[in-house]
Length: 133
Image (cartoon, rainbow, N blue to C red; front, side, top):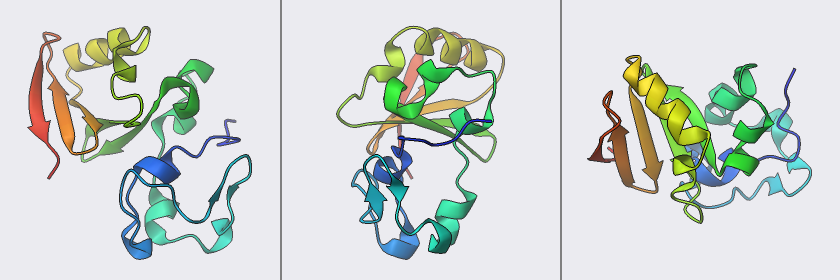
């Protein structure tokens, strides 16, 4: 079974309403190499967050967020790829782009964001700009 281990990229990329933590900034509770120092008392939005890499055995270590440069999660049936702003094009590298394109071709809605700017990956591998709502 996978564990977060030394990862914590979600603690940077995801916003946490209960903590008034904006997306793109490190959470005050994250400790490099140790994880969340408030893990037992973490807010509901952190408790329900589902990292796709963590939950998908078929995704190997190359998909771990600290390796890939992005966090993937599902939202209303869509696959959301949250890129680290310091690596906004990380998703374009192999093997990520090819797999994301394959999932889109199979009918999975794939949205890729770096901050508020985003792209919808279309089934034909083209992209269309989208804005975060």
